[in-house]
Length: 519
Image (cartoon, rainbow, N blue to C red; front, top):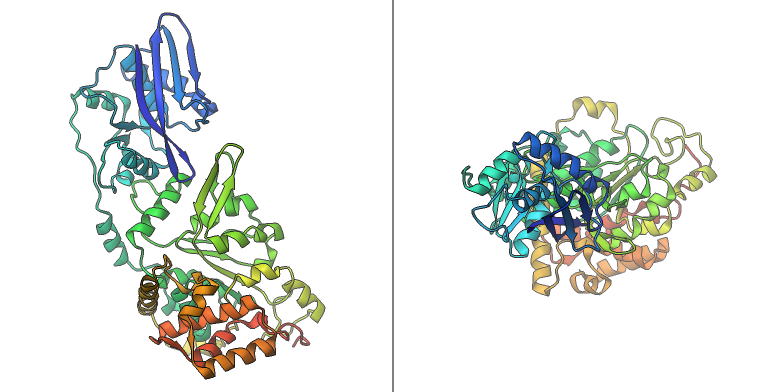
């Protein structure tokens, strides 16, 4: 007897329907074909034990299992459940009350028949809905994750025995549906564990981070140890606009595939903050492996990627960031297929100003020569620095301010300003008919359209370009920052004060920075 059960394979964030064909005929041998990897081949032992422990028998006949399409490699243990069901139906031990043509079934089996959670439940559900499947059967721990989608019935069960009884009609289960909008509303009312109100002083840096959040600009903070760079970077996510449902689903898909979605959680509700150590490899940062998995830049999608001690990262690791910073995605190519992972993140980097860390420190003397400082800064390539809109110096807060100053403005209030600026940008881009959402995405042609300068603003910008010998890219970065500053002020026209402030956020464009005699 030949039986077909449908499953799903994941290639990047996309799904591919896999048909598990099971044939039970005369003979005494077991075959599995269709490019299974070791985890799939080992399913035979798990399935046999799970069937026995659940009160069924492995047929002592010839069993052929084909995973179609046969030219796509099948990976992972999530095919255990459809294989077991195919064997039960083909051997006459199970007669479902309804055909399985409309079902996608996935799940890993323990030796006792318990269903273990799998990776990628949400992308599997999206694929099933898009390709006309109306029902999805998964392990119970994955059901809430897949149940946030409309248009598909999701059932979560705990054991192989429950699955068989459910398909026979002997066990009643209702489909699971979770309201994602309600989850997001509840999450938005919950405060972050960190807040900008905790930061004493550093008003200049706070202002720069508000600009970065409002325009989606990348930031490099340069300052001595203990100046507060990491503390400030950790709080940037608290002032980014609240998650939209589309952004939450995109981020959840990535975490589901990576196996990082917390058990029982159906949706990522807060923007991610990723801070990999400087010993990270380039594959771990951008993604890759077999099968290709998302890296840190994709795990930071719609959030913040924080690289502390930036010059300590291997140069090869930093250079692979250049393309994703421009395209906002990473393309991983293999011999037979190419996968794309989104990488739309805000980069926040931090570094010391010199090897000893105390160049320009108000109290502690620097032990480095000008040549040492230049070599330290030169560890960062020009093309990478060109992709960072804002670079600013962070100076330690005097001890008197730490003990006497009142707490600063809260993240909630700063986020309100950011969301107002983002709303202005969104309205502007919609009127232009372009699919952008923040000023950092502006192309050179669009930049000229949306950046209306007064005569005095234009003259100030020209003077800065001539004085500091700025590149065309640096010129455009200043315009983007100035456009964001104007949006924060609710202005349609960029005024001289916006150009002047934008120039102050580009300290590495000034030829004399790092050239002087250490204090």
